[in-house]
Image 1 (cartoon, rainbow, N blue to C red):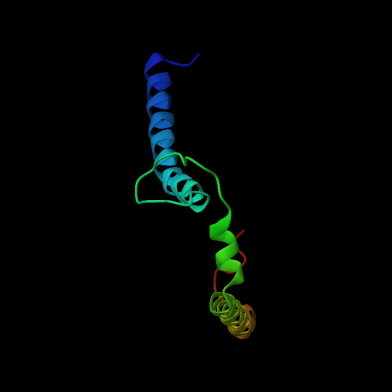
Image 2: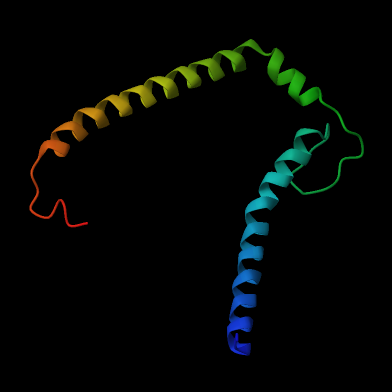
Length: 104
């Protein structure tokens, strides 16, 4: 049988986790609401009119698309480089004989 103090402790943990989740989700909610608000400001308010002009203006600007492509290219090359270097480092480490390698 679960003690009353354990239930209270579990409730407090869940409340703290809920507050943390809310603190993490509020900026995302603000960003989503501000993206569809044509007159967005730095406060969290519901938009008077929903508009997708912000998305259209971003996707039609060639400099932003070019910057996004450069970022994707750099991220992809960096990922490939990290995988290659990790494989090159992992192979000799896997062949190295350690004293307690097979404990489990």
